[in-house]
Every structure is written in structure tokens, then in C-alpha cells.
Image 1 (cartoon, helix red, strand yellow):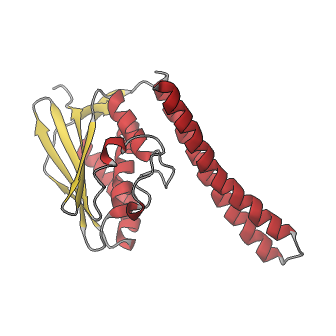
Image 2 (tube, rainbow, N blue to C red; image 1 turned 90 degrees about the vertical axis):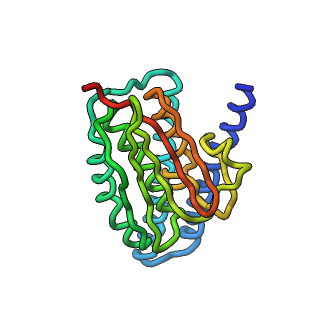
Image 3 (cartoon, helix red, strand yellow; image 1 turned 60 degrees about the vertical axis):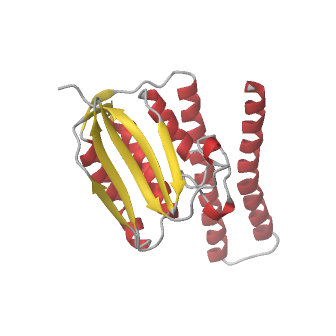
Length: 229
């Protein structure tokens, strides 16, 4: 089983890197095929730079996941105001949400949680970005906060095309490609690792992430331990 997964991941990595490398090679060959104006060369260089940045981001995410797999990454626990952190992420994503004509909404109230602040922000940045990728224009993305015994239940819900039932069991697999109708089902800019990172962060905190997708609504849900009084 492990060898099969390793083989599949290796194939997916090769696939992900092959496309941008091929694109850059082709663009460079075309650019060198004849003399061009400086502005044309600049456009090609900028295009190649974007591809380099995408590859660098994917490689950094792969290295981060490798560290978690090896047990090298340990959460730096502290008391965190979850609502304040989420509203800060809302501000960061506000321009994108406005461009998509989508509103970011928080419902419910909460008590402080015990977690790694930077990992909390990374996880919910990925979930909110994922929701923004797929939310219908003019709709709301709703983050619901609900205090349970010993935990804070946090869900991120958006309207839009549902995730096919056949994809849900593998939704958090690295590089898993879902139904084309949902395009980039991921919060990492299309690397295929964003949701895997969220799952890894939840695992580091002794928690799990679940998802439901039906009736034009998709909801991701996690539970994070409350901070002791």
C-alpha cells in the first residue's frame, strides 16, 4: 500500500512539474527563434517568472508536508482568539471577495482555543481561499463558530457546484484531481496540496476535518480544543 501511494505521488509530482517546465521551454524556444523587441522579451520573462513562482510554492508545500510526515514539525501552542484571527483573514481576502462579489460572514460566538496561531491562520486561509474559488457570485461564505464541550466547532460553507460523491473519500489526498467542473479544488493556488495541508494541520492538533457537499452547498468542518481557563 505504501509503495503504491509513493509511486502515485511520484507520478503526480512529475505531472505537475512537467506542464510548467514544458510551457517555459516552449516559450523560451519561440522567443529565441527570431529577434524581438525588448518589451516582448520582458513579457516572456514575466510569464516564466510566474511559472517559477508556482513551482517554488508547490515544492515548499511538499517540503512542509514531508516535515510533518517525519514528525519534525511541532505546534507552538498558545491561547488564540479564533474569531479575531478569522476576521483578520477576512480583511486579507476582502479584495478578492469583492472581485468575486462574495461576502464573508461569521456566525456564532466562541471562546479562545489552544492551537498554533500561524498554523491556524494557514489552515483557514486555505479553506477560505478554496471557498472563494468555488462560491457563486453574489453569495455568502459563512464561517460558523459553535462552542461544544471542550472544543470549538468551526465550519466554512459556500454555495456552488457540489463535490462529486466519488471524490469525497480522496478529497484530502495529495495531488488528487477532482471533477473538472470544480476546477482547482484547493486553497493552494492549484498545486493540489492545500486541503492536504489543512488535514495535516488538524492532525497535528489532534483534530480531524470533515466535508459534506449536497444541495448546492459545501461545508468543511473542524473541531479545535478550547483553551483552559
